[in-house]
Image (cartoon, rainbow, N blue to C red; front, side):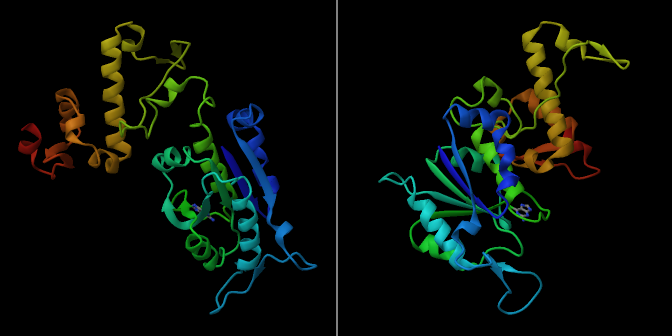
Length: 273
Ligand code: 6GU
């Protein structure tokens, strides 16, 4: 996969030399290039922003500068291959999830456009969509960052680790949180078996594979119910076994058609049923 990142702070992306993503780059699995947006400016001051039409606080990034950058980079590496997918990190985008990471990991070429200030002139996205490019405006969550760089790091790491050969043991991708099971991951333990007066749960030392699997699944269900009720509500009843449903009933979740819902307060009858 090739990824081009455009930013006014290329140094922000230095972290992509480290860890798994850095290793993937050195192994030639990921061709990642970081570009300074100012390379596409045309004036002596290398201006990338200006005041917003309509007034208001802050500055807006100029469409002409971004247009030249994206024209150059979407053409680069195309060679008759599939068109680049443009990613614009923005707090007003769709929320980036593991599903986005999985889809983006199948692309051949991503171009990530990191905005600063109040964002990029809206005509840039409009123009590149009209020119036939896929453009995804993505947020990494409901909070405000100063620019798209940290969000780009998050997305590139999430995508990079899904590329074939990047994670040494692909099995570790299977059970992790936000995988296909729709549950958070169970708690994990290693040596020593007793630490700070706390014991590793007995079942994990038992060597009884089936009991361990069941305990882990129960823990995953309990954690998900406690921390992410939205994920429990999204589970399909058909994907759950009798024991799952019993555990969830004990946590106050009842079957309602093909989904689960929180039993109303004061209806122990529904839970018992
Ligand atoms: Cl992608 N950008 C900025 N500036 N803030 C954010 C974000 C992105 N995602 C969440 N907050």
